[in-house]
Image (cartoon, rainbow, N blue to C red; front, side):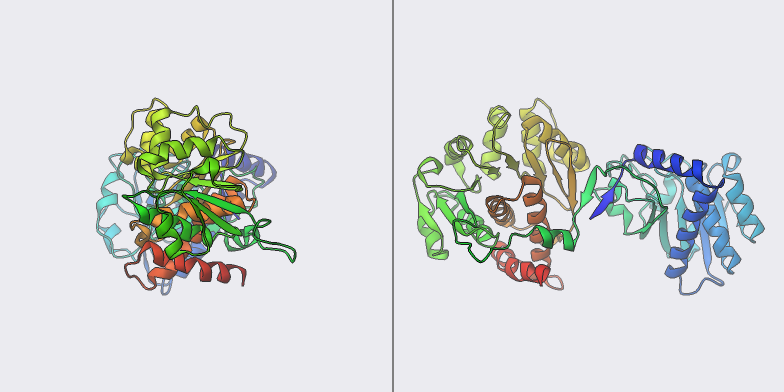
Length: 479
């Protein structure tokens, strides 16, 4: 598991550690790790041109101390001090003693082999100050390494309020920061490298499942399992206008670990033609038969309202997607609040904006995308449901405040029907008995990897290609 901590948690852990260590020891640990990473990025250290963009805080100090280490190995280091009067005294003295120098030539930024972004650390908020903002748009030929967080990115949320410096590599200290994992900030971070500082950290508010975590959560049948013991997932989806949504949701569900898929809706003929394994009716969730979880909404059209009501009246977990999300936004959170069995919502940014409107918040899809963590948490609390907010960095939040982030996907997943496959997959995992946070996290991880597998080196894919790739993706994880 990868963990990400808030700034206040990091600061508290650092203070505790500094109270036990010699003065400056923690900064030297950070600088040593930062310098080692930078050295590995250069073809050779000796003779390389290194520029430090140094702000006034400890972040600038980390960068200056690391640059001093590179200077002692023969690098030609220049420091651009954004606030010379407030530059970190110890770091600057170390750099000058090692043979580095201070420059006011901003053109050095574009000529450097490597640039250290030590402008603003994890204490920074809001857009870059006027003295720093020009560097965000300057051309560069060398590698830009962000010190702990790219300057201009909010470390706790990934929000970017204005200009921000785009890094090729980010070296973070002690723990990951949520802003390195959640877009739009994650798009500025490049490759993230963690330098451990030995901090005693509390439980992390943001998690990222790794391969072993997902493999451990995947359901596996026992010797006595049958299709009913493995779980039956119900799919209420599709309409005369959108029968393909039902076909795709069932396709995702068939590869999600449940023992059987029970479909109900107006696309029964199309579903059974494509998936003869499916158990089909046209009677709606209330009369479709026993299931362990329901998926409601993909392509449901006008029938989504009745299907949602009947599914929520059941005693099993319900995944709400697409047209059913639109219906829920219209009614507001009352149908999901206080429900005994859990609910999982799977909106994209536009649907999330409509759901937020159902909570009385006037917002749009662009604002949701810019504030992904805040939006997912607000929806989870407001609807009493786990929320899988789809996007380049998928954010999963549960009503208790836990958050997971998934970044296994590819831009090729942005294709019609991809979300229908994801809904069926996540619903199937719910039916196997996984908790909503786990089902959503595992589904997002698998769906992203399947999209990558289907796209290969980079080619257009269809939603059915994604569904077909789920089997080998699952097999590779457990193999």
